[in-house]
Amino acid sequence: MSKLTYGKGHVVVDPRTCGPPELYNGDGSLGSIVDPCSSKVQQCGVSKLSRSKTMIVKVQTPEDVKIVHDGIDDYLMVYNEKHDVHLLVSSKKCAQYAAIVKSVADKGIVGRKAYFPARLAPDGLLTINYLEHLAPQNW
Image 1 (tube, rainbow, N blue to C red):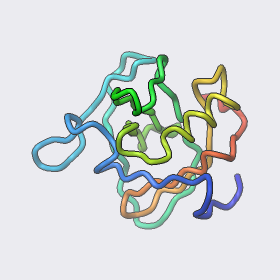
Image 2 (image 1 turned 90 degrees about the horizontal axis):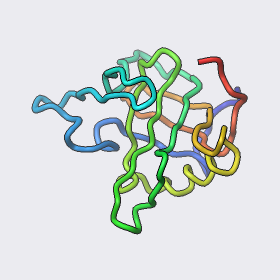
Image 3 (image 1 turned 120 degrees about the horizontal axis):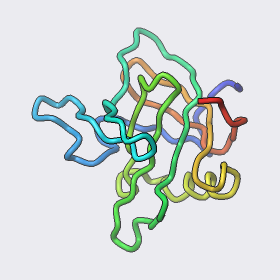
């Protein structure tokens, strides 16, 4: 995996603001979602870290992708192998949503999922290099 730097093709995801408001509990913590692939309940959010960590994340697009221009709010599912990073990224709250969807559609697995290098900072911000596609993983 290459060194992750900020610039073109990178998106910074803030787990506190990227997803649907109904995922957030009254105390500011993140709630859970049902994973549409496995039907298992997954806790949303990221694990706390003392220093930055690089990882591979899987990005899955919705089956029927509708970009925000038609008023529909779609979500990307982003997670790593251990599921200690598991987020929904809103099309209405992510300026690079359409570019990420295009990258996955053009070069991803059946146009619906792709693996990318990412870095999780101690403050919980996740930076994804969505132009650098990685080989499919066994998870």
